[in-house]
Length: 145
Image 1 (cartoon, rainbow, N blue to C red):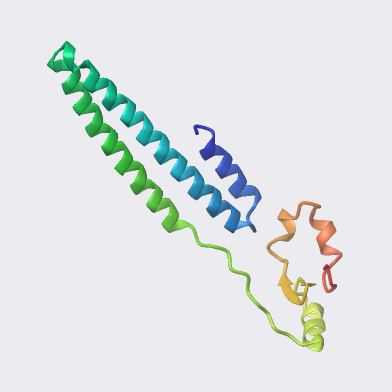
Image 2 (tube, rainbow, N blue to C red; image 1 turned 90 degrees about the vertical axis):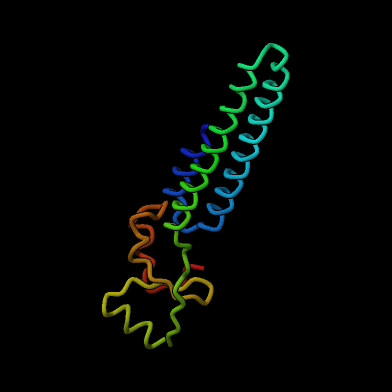
């Protein structure tokens, strides 16, 4: 669990175009965290009730720990909600152009490629391409399907 957050942060930097997977992984990470917190809280409460036979202090500590546990849970949930509010899912812009207009836009310097009947603007993606900028730059104006 402790490595899940840094792992998802690294994946977020590398998989900018696969936000559906990242949102799914974040959701799984979140619910596994909640399950871990609930299990740990249950174990602590059970131990506190078992310790009540030793006096009032263990029972009081159990109550205090439960209050702090709930406060941490609420705090992390608020933090998560703020983080999610900042995320904007990637939505590809659909460009509809004729063959002549496509050629004209390429001549005017736009960085467009065809991918399975989609016209994609790769100007912002070039630097992040896994094969390097050159690998995608020489495909401008072509069908890369």
